[in-house]
Length: 450
Image (tube, rainbow, N blue to C red; front, top):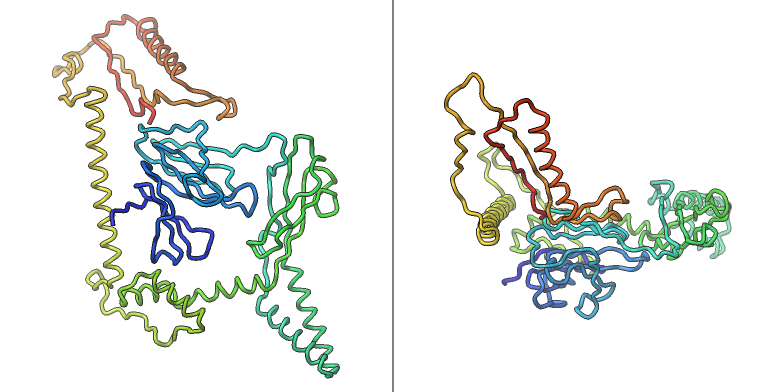
């Protein structure tokens, strides 16, 4: 009660989840979200984002959180505790003036981080050691692998059966032919269970500075450490050209296990689990945990007992199932919360406008020369200047834009002065009989950054 969750991520273990809250807590669940416990609490901290990514190696896992007003972006490769976090806020504004957004995510290998804050997208990049080596490009070939799991499983079973039969003394032509056929099938299937990894490696001392690169594909069912070579003998192009390559072969039992896991997702299925859980008064996650626990004990559900719900009416007047009703209730509650938040944001903007900028609402009273009820044959011209997107306060460094552009308050002042000077020049030096009663200034949005 009272906890306001802001983000949820899956942990490294099965059925483990982490949740961030606005009151500075990091909650942990080890049973697929059924029960939660406080893993760490950070006073005066408002977590708005929590995410996971990989570190410098395939086995390094990074958990990171974002508190826009106090801690900024903090990371850890171990436990998420106050004494184990490292801040990563170089060039990132952290303070009380952050009003909106504040969502942070990373790419798959943890080299680039994206953060939305005050309607602005911030990009952070992990610094690469100047001496290297580091991978600048990587790809695989072929892009997909087709393996006959059933044929491979049957061939392995037949192979073991024939070997046992021959070992028992039944050295017959039939057993020998079947043994050879099973071995040939296995060789053919295994030959398709591999692909090559290519990596282009850079080094400060040149391409010859790296002899062997190593990749870790254990999580994909491959070997734990696979060497990649740049010797011209592993489909890697010419020797010492910076392109490394190596072959990765998958383990048959791992691929078969993954295939069985995918096939087992067909029953009871999300629909059946949802309906059953609703009738029991449980959440869907709770029922899924019970089903998995039962499967580990050798108890499987009786599929014949599941009967899909029958439709009793059609059209717009058909009664809704309880699941659909709950979905509409959730949607309505979400929309009410969004409307309430929008009203609060409008009120906050009005208070900020009055207190900080001393701006007050007043009726629009156009100048007497701006609107005339008469329709004269000839009258004075009126210049119009439309400005927008000044972004006062924004800072763009040349190194962040590859030297193409930069922006700062000093540059904004120079540009604004040049705008006014050229407007005056165009109105009075390039027009015939410049006699204006005034000028219309249209001010668009985004005058102030954020």
